[in-house]
Length: 105
Image (cartoon, rainbow, N blue to C red; front, side, top):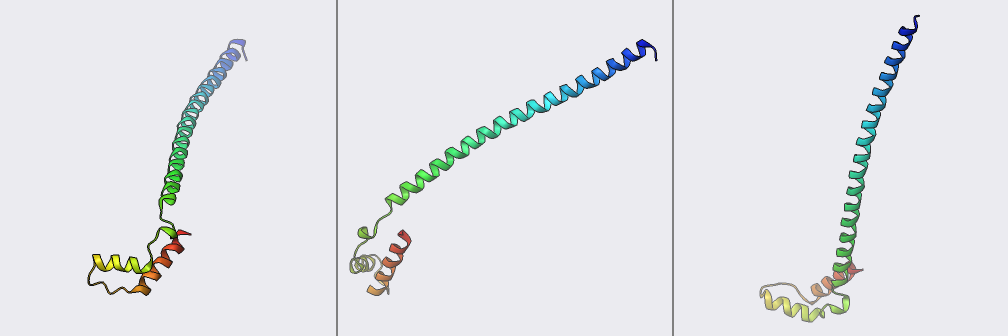
């Protein structure tokens, strides 16, 4: 094979290798961009999670405790004041307060 043919073949191989490297470089840049976007998304989701946990804790802390609930008789009187025809009785109010105290735990 003449020397010029060998050099021409080597140039073609070098050109093909450079094209492949350029393509890989382009793909790598795209992956870096995507990685940066995903990192930003992770940061945003972590912030949302912190806020949700803080909001949950605040609402949990603001819920009335068992000591804050009225006595069953007082609760029944309040209900009768608001809903004259209510058929609830003292046992019903005790059950409601038991349920609420159970949910609080």
